[in-house]
Amino acid sequence: MILLLFDIDGTLIFTGGAGMRAFSRALHEVFDIRIDGSDVRPDGKTDPLILREILASFDLSGRCRPGTRQEMFALYIRYLEQEMEKARESGRIAILPGVEDFLPAVSSESDFALGLATGNLEDGARVKLEKAGLYGYFKFGGFGSDSEDRTELTRIGIERGMRYVRPDSVDGVFVVGDTPLDVIHGRNAGASVIAVASGRYGVRELQVCAPDLVLSDLREAESIISFMRNGRGSISCNKW
Image 1 (cartoon, rainbow, N blue to C red):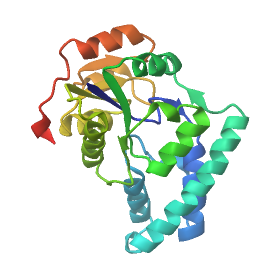
Image 2 (image 1 turned 60 degrees about the vertical axis):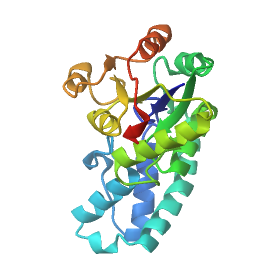
Image 3 (image 1 turned 90 degrees about the vertical axis):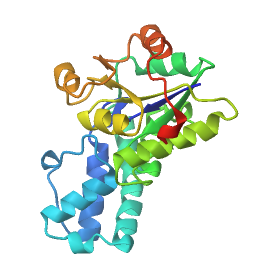
Image 4 (image 1 turned 180 degrees about the vertical axis):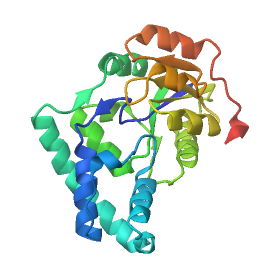
């Protein structure tokens, strides 16, 4: 079996800013601060890390305690449901090029299992993908709610994938993402990486990180599937 773990934002969908609006609303309610979304660079980061960096920029690191984090993220999920529904109704959710063909194509292959490797909280990932109509494709994953560290959450996602496909063995693992951090942490987790220039970063910027494959989008499903099958991404289970 080949495990295929996807990032969400900029790789599969754009949310029309719904995620940052929900994050900003929760920040204001819990910490009484306001942020300009243009000043926040969430690309490839986990939700807990984004929160910690924002609080540090306001000299509020001491308030990043388990209780306030729990309150903040509970509000964030509630507001994310609202903002994503507004974005869906107004047509601001965009499924990125090739995704609507690629996901059914690869999920129909008996030797692939699809999951997630995302900095989103698990509930946040569910909300975003449900509103986009894509959630049903993914059977396991690693999330920002598992670890602030993206390498660690990717390892957790891989381990869950290996349990999901048992008793079948895992012959390869690929992470698909749109940022340099997706590439770096996917490699650090022991996976091969497909970088997609569908987000903020272009093909040349992603090539610098030396992923196994760089694509402008996911429109060539058959070619991508063939690439993954042809001996690339073979792994040793002792990496995890």
